[in-house]
Image (cartoon, rainbow, N blue to C red; front, side, top):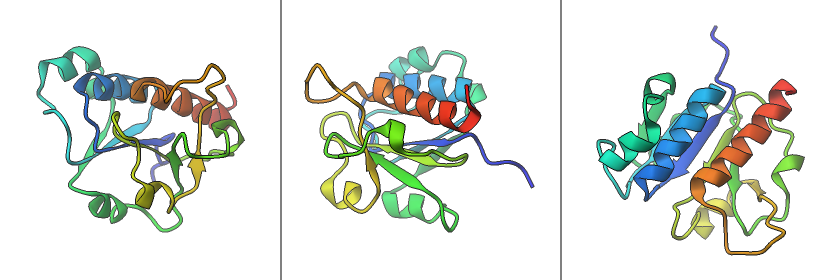
Length: 154
Protein backbone atom coordinates (compact mmCIF):
# COMPACT_ATOMS: atom_id res chain seq x y z
CA UNK A 1 0.00 0.00 0.00
CA UNK A 2 1.35 3.42 -0.94
CA UNK A 3 2.33 5.85 1.76
CA UNK A 4 -0.03 8.83 1.98
CA UNK A 5 1.26 12.21 0.87
CA UNK A 6 3.15 14.23 3.45
CA UNK A 7 -0.03 16.23 3.94
CA UNK A 8 -3.02 17.75 2.19
CA UNK A 9 -3.63 21.47 1.76
CA UNK A 10 -7.32 22.26 1.35
CA UNK A 11 -8.63 25.56 -0.01
CA UNK A 12 -12.32 26.14 0.65
CA UNK A 13 -13.88 28.34 -2.04
CA UNK A 14 -10.65 30.11 -3.05
CA UNK A 15 -11.10 33.44 -4.82
CA UNK A 16 -7.72 34.47 -6.25
CA UNK A 17 -5.96 32.55 -9.02
CA UNK A 18 -2.53 33.84 -8.03
CA UNK A 19 -2.88 32.63 -4.45
CA UNK A 20 -3.97 29.17 -5.55
CA UNK A 21 -1.07 29.00 -8.00
CA UNK A 22 1.38 29.91 -5.24
CA UNK A 23 -0.14 27.32 -2.88
CA UNK A 24 0.14 24.71 -5.63
CA UNK A 25 3.86 25.52 -5.99
CA UNK A 26 4.36 25.07 -2.24
CA UNK A 27 2.51 21.76 -2.37
CA UNK A 28 4.69 20.60 -5.26
CA UNK A 29 7.95 21.23 -3.43
CA UNK A 30 6.62 19.69 -0.20
CA UNK A 31 5.07 16.59 -1.75
CA UNK A 32 1.63 17.61 -0.52
CA UNK A 33 -1.69 17.12 -2.29
CA UNK A 34 -3.85 20.16 -3.02
CA UNK A 35 -7.63 20.06 -2.63
CA UNK A 36 -9.81 22.80 -4.10
CA UNK A 37 -13.42 23.05 -2.95
CA UNK A 38 -15.85 24.86 -5.27
CA UNK A 39 -17.02 27.41 -6.05
CA UNK A 40 -13.83 29.18 -7.15
CA UNK A 41 -13.52 32.88 -7.86
CA UNK A 42 -11.50 32.12 -11.02
CA UNK A 43 -10.92 29.44 -13.66
CA UNK A 44 -8.04 26.98 -13.47
CA UNK A 45 -7.10 28.07 -16.99
CA UNK A 46 -6.75 31.75 -16.01
CA UNK A 47 -3.48 33.37 -17.08
CA UNK A 48 -2.86 34.58 -13.52
CA UNK A 49 -3.16 31.01 -12.17
CA UNK A 50 -0.81 29.63 -14.84
CA UNK A 51 1.72 32.40 -14.21
CA UNK A 52 1.73 31.80 -10.45
CA UNK A 53 1.95 28.00 -10.65
CA UNK A 54 4.54 28.12 -13.47
CA UNK A 55 5.67 24.60 -14.36
CA UNK A 56 5.00 23.19 -10.88
CA UNK A 57 1.48 21.98 -11.64
CA UNK A 58 2.84 18.70 -13.00
CA UNK A 59 4.45 18.05 -9.60
CA UNK A 60 1.33 18.38 -7.48
CA UNK A 61 -1.75 16.20 -7.29
CA UNK A 62 -4.76 18.52 -7.45
CA UNK A 63 -8.18 17.28 -6.32
CA UNK A 64 -11.26 19.30 -7.21
CA UNK A 65 -14.40 18.92 -5.10
CA UNK A 66 -17.86 20.23 -5.96
CA UNK A 67 -18.67 21.13 -2.34
CA UNK A 68 -17.62 20.65 1.28
CA UNK A 69 -19.92 17.61 1.46
CA UNK A 70 -18.27 16.08 -1.60
CA UNK A 71 -14.84 16.69 -0.06
CA UNK A 72 -15.91 15.07 3.22
CA UNK A 73 -17.00 12.01 1.27
CA UNK A 74 -13.39 11.46 0.17
CA UNK A 75 -11.96 11.42 3.71
CA UNK A 76 -10.87 8.14 5.22
CA UNK A 77 -12.21 7.31 8.69
CA UNK A 78 -10.09 9.06 11.30
CA UNK A 79 -8.69 11.66 8.89
CA UNK A 80 -7.49 14.75 10.74
CA UNK A 81 -8.64 18.08 9.32
CA UNK A 82 -7.22 21.24 10.90
CA UNK A 83 -9.09 24.50 10.26
CA UNK A 84 -6.87 27.59 10.14
CA UNK A 85 -8.57 30.69 11.46
CA UNK A 86 -7.81 33.97 13.18
CA UNK A 87 -10.62 32.90 15.57
CA UNK A 88 -8.56 29.99 16.94
CA UNK A 89 -6.79 29.96 20.28
CA UNK A 90 -4.08 27.36 19.56
CA UNK A 91 -0.97 28.14 17.54
CA UNK A 92 -0.10 25.86 14.63
CA UNK A 93 3.23 24.98 16.24
CA UNK A 94 1.36 23.10 18.99
CA UNK A 95 -0.70 20.88 16.69
CA UNK A 96 1.43 17.73 16.57
CA UNK A 97 0.90 17.22 12.85
CA UNK A 98 0.97 13.71 11.39
CA UNK A 99 1.57 12.40 7.88
CA UNK A 100 -1.60 12.66 5.85
CA UNK A 101 -3.18 15.51 7.86
CA UNK A 102 -5.41 18.02 6.08
CA UNK A 103 -4.78 21.76 6.52
CA UNK A 104 -7.93 23.74 5.68
CA UNK A 105 -8.00 27.42 4.70
CA UNK A 106 -10.93 29.65 3.84
CA UNK A 107 -11.50 32.17 1.08
CA UNK A 108 -9.35 35.27 0.99
CA UNK A 109 -12.09 37.84 1.63
CA UNK A 110 -13.89 36.19 4.55
CA UNK A 111 -12.07 33.13 5.91
CA UNK A 112 -13.85 29.94 6.85
CA UNK A 113 -17.55 30.25 7.67
CA UNK A 114 -18.39 29.76 11.36
CA UNK A 115 -20.41 26.59 10.69
CA UNK A 116 -17.32 24.97 9.23
CA UNK A 117 -14.48 26.31 11.37
CA UNK A 118 -16.40 25.64 14.60
CA UNK A 119 -16.92 21.98 13.66
CA UNK A 120 -13.18 21.23 13.45
CA UNK A 121 -10.05 21.62 15.56
CA UNK A 122 -8.79 25.14 14.88
CA UNK A 123 -5.30 26.54 14.64
CA UNK A 124 -3.93 30.02 14.13
CA UNK A 125 -0.71 31.57 12.98
CA UNK A 126 0.95 34.17 15.20
CA UNK A 127 0.44 37.77 14.13
CA UNK A 128 2.38 39.74 16.74
CA UNK A 129 2.34 42.90 14.62
CA UNK A 130 -1.44 42.93 14.34
CA UNK A 131 -3.50 43.10 11.19
CA UNK A 132 -6.60 41.24 10.16
CA UNK A 133 -4.95 38.20 8.55
CA UNK A 134 -2.09 36.95 6.41
CA UNK A 135 -2.36 36.45 2.66
CA UNK A 136 -3.80 33.01 1.89
CA UNK A 137 -0.74 31.71 0.05
CA UNK A 138 1.58 32.95 2.81
CA UNK A 139 -0.57 31.41 5.55
CA UNK A 140 -0.83 28.08 3.73
CA UNK A 141 2.93 28.05 3.12
CA UNK A 142 3.82 28.84 6.74
CA UNK A 143 1.43 26.18 8.04
CA UNK A 144 2.40 23.51 5.50
CA UNK A 145 6.14 23.94 6.05
CA UNK A 146 5.68 23.78 9.83
CA UNK A 147 3.63 20.62 9.41
CA UNK A 148 6.37 19.17 7.20
CA UNK A 149 9.01 20.12 9.76
CA UNK A 150 7.09 18.36 12.51
CA UNK A 151 6.43 15.26 10.42
CA UNK A 152 9.87 14.90 8.82
CA UNK A 153 12.03 16.50 11.52
CA UNK A 154 13.77 19.03 9.26
